[in-house]
Image (cartoon, rainbow, N blue to C red; front, side, top):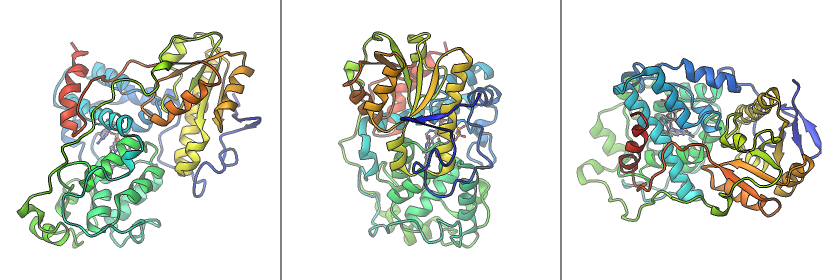
Amino acid sequence: MDLTLDRTDAHLGATPDALAGLYAGPATALAGAPPARHDAARAALAAYDVRRYASTRNHLDGNVSRLNPYVTWGALTLREVLTSVRAKHGRMDRDLEKFVDELGWKAFFREGFRALGGRVYRSLEPYKYPTAEKLPGPPPGVEVGDTGLPCMDRLLADLAATGYLHNHGRLWLAGWWVHYAGHAWEDGERFLYRRLLDGEPGPNALSWQWVASTFGGKPYVFDGANLRRFGLEGCDGAPFDTDRDTLDRRFFGGYAGGGYARRPKEQPRTVRDVPVPRLRRGPGDRPVVVLHAERLSPHAAALDAAPGAPVVVTLDARRLREEGGTWGRVAFAAELALDAARALQDAGRDASVHLVEAEADLAERVRALGGASVVTPGSWHPGTWRTLARLDEHLPVSVVEDPPFAQVDAPLRSFSAYWKVARPQVVARFD
Ligand SMILES: Cc1cc2nc3c(=O)[nH]c(=O)nc-3n(C[C@H](O)[C@H](O)[C@H](O)COP(=O)(O)OP(=O)(O)OC[C@H]3O[C@@H](n4cnc5c(N)ncnc54)[C@H](O)[C@@H]3O)c2cc1C
């Protein structure tokens, strides 16, 4: 079925023209990207076998799932991933334990973003080691993948070709950027986010801060042996290919001898209530379901709350424009949105895709479909809640959340502090 992206009056396809202004750089397809389809997401989840995850996940060729682009755009929820992987694996051993922990990291960072909003983009704490002011922009050569360090160039090439980077690759790239090249984590965060299919504000910004030591007790440090051990070659003799004492003196001001700076006592906690509590009401009259970028799925609970209602799958054009993601990233989201609408049409529903420029236009669109109210999924993105609150000024909006991964009142000082509270709730579902 030839679906079109519908931007106010104009009917457009998910082509570079249709998405003009919403992405940055050339419209080059990503050869190694996963298919932006919901059947492919479900098939990849069903096929994933978690055996050997614990022992291999740190290796570049280890058995990681690569499911995260689907999770990030809400094609799969963390809970769906866990339920499926657990059912297939059947027992709680080291592999599943580790996998659950990693899902927990995503939940932790999402809670961090819910609690902190735009503050994740500014250093939450001082650096824990003495350092000169970090340099702005990317280190020389990064933009063209020619840094003079073949190991970093390989990571940059992987990223450019696939829109994905292995977790260890992200750690090395960020650690090199901030500590060894001496550039600001904030610019690294933007650089990576724009290129990742799974770029997500909380996990990305807070991981960069964790590496930098502005959200944690110490910097993330690696050396040349570490790269080689986990499968990254090409940096023998680089300034960081040395023993830990030399690294310490060369880049960290000898902190290891004198101890790190302390972390501030004030630390964030999870936010229990949703940002706009009044939207937690039951569906109103003549509802239309509006799906958004955090739940681009034909399986969202909001769809069941308004059976048979027309569906508008949305992407926020304003947010995409501001983010300046690559064509690969933006096209992935647009295709997932189109595919959700296509799947819903196949199931007999009236479904279309709409790029939101203003809430008033979206309200107009809902009315044109005969709607008088909106039902929509919950979100970990405070910006989406602000959009929904503005839409609610035009039409009553009702938020219907999917079953949560974890819902706890917990400290966000560190993953372990959060996970100590959240994990028991998550694994209790296994009994
Ligand atoms: C500098 C830096 C930037 C990062 N940017 C992002 C980002 O923008 N978005 C993002 O979701 N993650 C980010 N991560 C975390 C992590 O690298 C990715 O989540 C992971 O690589 C996804 O690949 P996967 O699906 O193969 O993971 P798997 O190892 O198969 O893990 C299963 C799932 O658990 C979650 N997960 C695994 N590891 C982590 C982690 N360390 N933190 C959070 N969730 C995790 C993901 O949902 C993932 O799909 C970043 C890490 C670093 C160090």
